[in-house]
Image 1: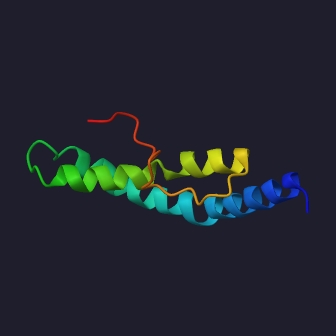
Image 2: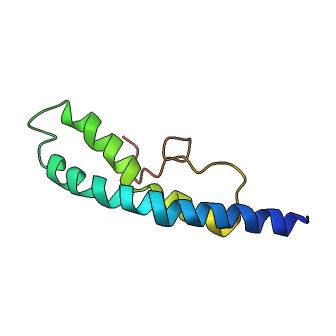
Length: 88
């Protein structure tokens, strides 16, 4: 197999991950994130919960990038490039 065939295989795997796991999980967590985000200032422990949920909600962006690039590394929502838009 050539390098492009390997990249195509990984792109297909990540596309399946995107459609069947990342997007459904992100949609589910988005509801909770929207609910809890309003209470961050009221209850300080909620900030940890919303930060975790945001990583899951933004995970499809990381997986989508892995699909386009054909990455061989698993596109985790908790890695160095964790999808957080603003670092605190």
